[in-house]
Each structure stands twice: as C-alpha cells, then as structure tokens.
View 1: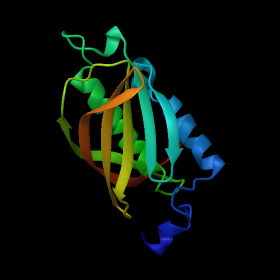
View 2: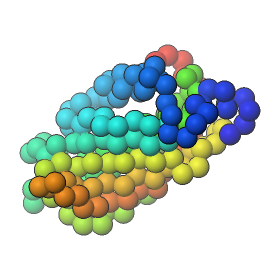
View 3: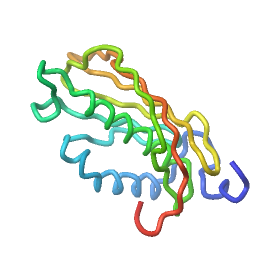
Length: 158
C-alpha cells in the first residue's frame, strides 16, 4: 500500500477498530441478496471475513444441493467484505472479475465462505474465497474462488 492509504488501514495484521467492524456489519446488513439468502456475517478481521448461509429450498438447485449461483454469491460477498477491511473509510472494493471452481456438490446444513485478501493494493485487490458446507459439526470444502477487485472512492455509505 502507498503511504496515502496506509493511515486509513489498521497498523497491526488482524486488528480492526470496533467502529470499522460495526460499519462493515451495517453495510452487510444492507445487502439485499444476502438478506434474501439468509446469510450472516460470522467474523470480520483485517483482511479476512467469514459468512454463513443456511440451507433452504430457496437456495437449491433441482437435486437439492446448494445452487452454484448461491455458492458463488456467498464467496463474492466474503471476498468483497475482506477487501473492505483493507481500504480507507471513503473507499470500497468492487468486483472486477472472478473465477470459481466448484469442487463437489454443496450438500449440508449451511454454506460457509471465508474471504481472504491475498494482495492489497492502491487500485486493485486480489482475494481468495473458500466455500465449505457444514453438516453435523464437520466442514467440507466445496468451492474456491480467485477474485480481483477495483478500489473506488465512495460517495455515500459503503
């Protein structure tokens, strides 16, 4: 990161001010698609976010598995919010592109997506999203995503 952006980002890896974490949680609560899917923000740290989505008929495909679009949307949001922890308060990360590998059918009680920033930058951020299903206390990876986000100035709330 450049020095112009460095002051807006917490100095210690993993640290995030309570105010910034609250702002991110408020932003997540405004996500219409995530609300429709019943997704929740489980954990937010500098550079890493964990989201969860419960199984429901509304997020499945014809065989009863989580739909690939729901898997991708959860990973997209996890990566986007991980990026948001790394930019200034007047900035956001918008998805420029992503590639997702669906590794196995997503069948379980819930989906969990962990988004991690791999490379923060002044104009571009690269993030990875790993998606798991949880069933009976066990976790199995079902997808992985690689994403590039553009850093943009915001004109209002993030």
